[in-house]
Image (cartoon, rainbow, N blue to C red):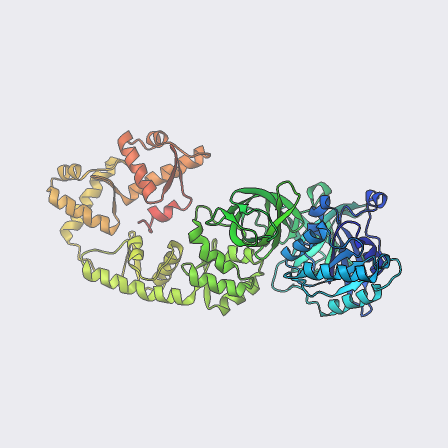
Length: 640
């Protein structure tokens, strides 16, 4: 069990830890000279039953609150220290607020320096403490009257801590990936770089390969110490020191994390649920600059409030935090918000979405954030699958909840969900796939009955006819699976049922052969129905009918009013755009550059590029365009 002290400066936190453990936690020369704690101190106490209790001694001065927050970021138990002579002081209040915001729900109060005051004064301060704790997670916590000078109450406090330690349940080390928040880094002669911190999730063993987050620097664990002794393994809830290979001291900073490669997901944006302290005099306003304390890090951030201009004291809301520096977080990570000057605590909360999508309205994200309020990943998964088009980005979900793949797979099976795709796997209800597999052939039968002369339907048009809501990726997966099972056929960019005969006449086949021969010498220029009718000596009506039919078949696409291209010509022009994108890079290519490369007139170039924008092959940004990486999915067999 890890215990963190909390309380005002000079209320005896360090002396109390020394009385309990025999360890002096003030290690810096300045701390010894000034007699106050400046940085975090650590001590371990071997309990009588063989268990180990770790202590994090935090500074009490208001100037070092940031160090205090780092110290309580991953502890299990709070020991609020209040001196009987001073009573409740400013940092007594602020430290208790921070303990509450960090989600620490267990603790004791040590009423120190009782040898200096009367029984009446002790009773008075006990009343102040009871009032202070009311409405917090520590309401009703036991108060121990102690003196580090006489030793009174120390044994009783120690015995009570041992009882708490025996009942303490560590975090999971089997279902979550390893994460450790670094609070110190130093070198040891002959060993190299050593980092210390608390294992927040998972477990680590000698020889494990990890990465520093957010930098991504790789490291190997040479050896591990816990409570001052070598160990082979450290698990969630334990403090440890890791001797690292492959990392220099100047590459490590307090606030960094050690994580497995799968959890390296640095972000400068974070969706969170926060609450403003009721003691605040003013509301927290939208677009306020502040300091975010997460893990052992302090980062400058700007807060954007969902759907409102401010959060009133004592109230909460969904927010998005824009960070000056990237962090690696997980759903449920607690955080503290302090004003930009670093003088007071404003509020706090916990992370929800560690990689919020860009460009989505808050109203659209509300169901997602509500689902991510569940700390239990199984409950969150169920809520996500029921609310969002029934599909979940697998990598995002597993990173958000820091899940080991095998445990995540167990959750998917329990939720009767399927994982589809390889590069960007999606999780969705199995029933959704079953419904789509049944509906697509029904939709095709209806289409063939209505348009028996058409050889098939374009995939995007088919998708639009479905009652079952499917994203493009899921629809393509279902369509391919039906084709693999020979329940549908894909040909020429169209979908049809097996055995469907559109009844194309021999006359039309011969006419289309002449069209293809005529277009062989036309290069990549879009052609018009009038040109086609004149060259082939057929009527305008017959030309229009043929082009309309071939558009439905996917052989021809209408790129502008009165202008057409063969599917093969469109694919070739898209290849030109791809080559230009690779050649020019950066911002992309202009219409003039595409015109010169493809050899098409200016007016037709503009119309063609607008068509490519419309079907998603290219994306325009000002005067420049870039081609999407998977453009061949659109211009090839899956062209819309």
